[in-house]
Image 1 (cartoon, rainbow, N blue to C red):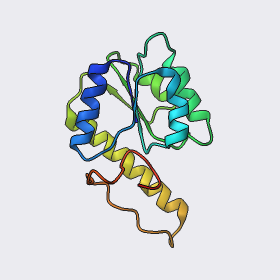
Image 2 (tube, rainbow, N blue to C red):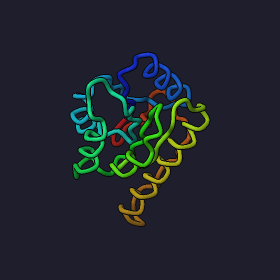
Image 3 (cartoon, rainbow, N blue to C red):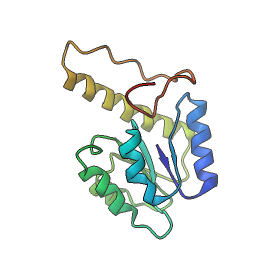
Length: 148
């Protein structure tokens, strides 16, 4: 899930992720973050920390305190160095803007792999094999969990 109220940045991130085979869920309004995350159960959230007239740290804390959403990895994005605040509020990682696409892909893939390993471990040794986290075809989800 990609969250940003800047439509240029939202389009940029969406395009980058689609080029890598991901199918991001797009959210541009702060009030839609929690309901969309609850309904869609994304594999990962890229969260801009400067959403208009919104305390995004509070939204981040709400995500991480919700038992249904707390396991979703969140990468906080900001043009200001808010790394310490974001990590203290529950972000799994932080990226300072501007960043290179390769840096974004490395962090996304690292968190998706960590999450897949945690899920496979929690399901036990007799669970279905976890698919590799490589770019997928357009008919398969990647930023979503569950059914295609």
